[in-house]
Length: 529
Length: 92
Image (tube, each protein chain N blue to C red):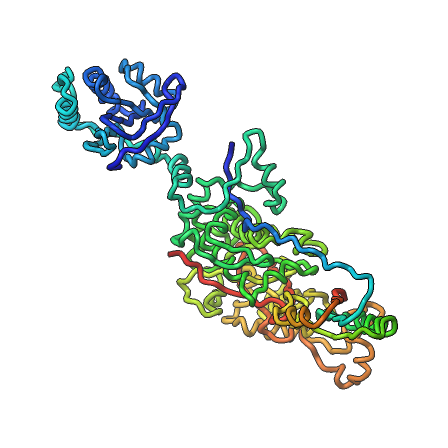
């Protein structure tokens, strides 16, 4: 409750604006029509007004919209009853409970204030007003009133009201430009017209929604998470939160989105190139650690889509940040020849509970209890690898290897290009049927089964891709007989486990230009504060 | 009326003027190879044609480390300081 009265202008029951200048002597009381205790205070207020209304200003502020009139009629109120529409005055006067009474002196200082109904407080207030204004004491049958009744919570604490009030308050943490959409305009259409969308409808980022989103992180809204390519826009926590709202995220997802923005905006990941390439690369996010369960992310059946809100909206939020904060619009810096559905969203969690291996984040140097997001630049996928008949570990490992032959195109080998292999639980069962089958052994097996003589990679009439004929002639038969595996090194093969219990279908994402020339996968710990 | 918050970086793009065209080529012409396959073939041919058609023009060759990333600042500044014209070979 405030110590110095604040001015306000609110409408009376007949719709006439009435100003209160914040000075006294005056009595200001907040009430709610459906509050039992306010209804006990109602006759008291009328008694006070009858006794002192000639010498003081007295107003009642109703929080109940159209029902304010019911309250006034029920108690025969003859003093001004003002509508605290939107509860802004309630918020500014910092009340928690109704009824809330403020007795204010000539200078605007709050001399007496209380909430709820304590009969002695109200009677003392009446005596104080009588004494200070030198008027006869109000004729109120105090003995007929209860000694004490708790009040009700002020209406402005309703979440949809409170977040809006906080967002619009003078001291609001929000700094983003407020865009007014005329009442005659459709907000969804307006956002399409402004170019904010990835092609799908957006949730309007109203101030109150953004305030709720920001509650998902302990970080200051104006903290700069990253400068976002290609325009090097300033990616504050607030801007990320706005885009997360539009994507449909819950506040609890925000720390994951923030970590993902940090990860892709590194020089290593090179989101500028990932976005701009005509090859059509997209960010694939893998999430590990306790945040997966906390946010209800999907690592099992249908992990890669669709139907899980966290997976879908976290991936989408990242993409919207790159579009809106970074300025990467399709046809602008975004130059993909065909595009890629992963550019809408591609985010899933690793199924750590069924994996025989260290989770991806532990493999990459984090603690098991850390929550981590890892980003990969991928151009294709998920491409399924179908093998329902292998029963031996080396057989299924071989099939997974052969399934990766399509990266770039089957003829090209020795590729310095990442692949992300997603092994399904049934294939894990086959891999481990005889005991441990390490990730490195799987990588070795992939390299082994994909090894082909260089002679098969020479440009010919079937395909002009590969080793130029002139170069092949210089190499000679012995060199051309050498075997080349699919990948230039086994470190290019990244492996995670995901998927439901049933189905012998693993999958793979095919990489883009990997390494310093293009993109290097990046992991970032998620700050859950 | 609905209020929404601006999801963009709120910057007004700088309007850049295209350098005035003089109608003739003179001074130094830079040829930038962005390191895409066969970009050098195009630039070699341009190099030959410029040398034939404008013998007084000096040609300087530059190479981006990788086509997959923006041009490093140092190289952009070098080209800006050294060249009057720039031809960039983009394609495969």
